[in-house]
Amino acid sequence: MENLSEYLTTISDRLRARGHRMTPQRMAILRAILESPTHPTAEEIYRQVSADFPMLSLATVYKTLHVLKELGATRELTVDGISRYDRNLPPHPHLVCVRCQAVIDLPPEMMVTLPEEALAGYGFHPLWYEVSVYGLCSRCLEAKK
Amino acid sequence: MENLSEYLTTISDRLRARGHRMTPQRMAILRAILESPTHPTAEEIYRQVSADFPMLSLATVYKTLHVLKELGATRELTVDGISRYDRNLPPHPHLVCVRCQAVIDLPPEMMVTLPEEALAGYGFHPLWYEVSVYGLCSRCLEAKK
DNA sequence: TATCTTTGAAGAACAATTCTCCAAAAGGAA
DNA sequence: TTCCTTTTGGAGAATTGTTCTTCAAAGATA
Image (cartoon, rainbow over all chains, first blue to last red; front, top):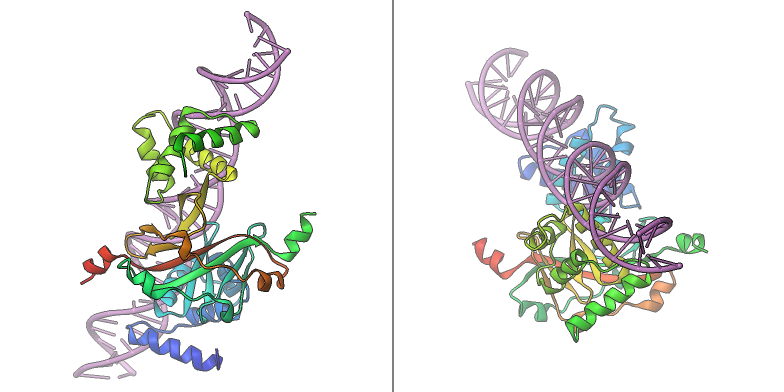
């Protein structure tokens, strides 16, 4: 994420290239994802953006998230059956706390590499992959004692 | 999974050790998971077991799945927001088709190993981890043309 | 057998997500 | 600018996966 406003312009362009428009609501939702370190849920994004757009509805948040996902501006991950949204950075592993549901990013250099050639033997065409480590975060580990 | 009936006995023992009972319904649900290669959903398990137990309710399936999960007899994985159940074999990667939602097991020897020591630096206590490769299965790849 | 506990069926309840409808706003053409 | 077409977003209902509640039946224990 070199330059934020530059990145936002890129996404706006991609939106228009698909015949969509960059609206204030969409911009605000995208910013909310980019600025949050916590992999927020749709509900959390809704609450945050609502501060600036009181008339915003949750359905709009969901619709926008789908669009952003298609554009590759965000990535959806499911934790405990609930969708969370990650900025679409280089692939990196996730630490997921099974107690407080926090999702922690690991640096991309800790991402394992796929055995591509072996996969090809399955006739499977990989698009992306995820590595999730489940366990207890330091805070919850403490709390459990 | 050396010997099926032996394994079922092991699980029954663990159930009783926790003050639960091995009932015909639970046995049928467990068998359904063990015998299915498709990582079935609760709904699919329900439909299959219903053939033998027409009075079985979906809620019972869910309750049983939770119990089996606690016993370590099955593992839950979420695909597209829907829970699916895997026999609890040695850790292995999953191929997930983004079009037909099929989940394909890879052999355990293709599972990557975690950089345990690096994880420890985060104060994170890992319990288990998952590797999921998303893409198109051979059939869906064909169908898309 | 009498008693205490665990179980599972049924359906209501719940929560996350999606759908439907429609009025308002944006973009393009004249 | 003005008209026309298309996209958008809001409101709330609907849908769907999952959980909860209640209660009678079955199992275990003494």
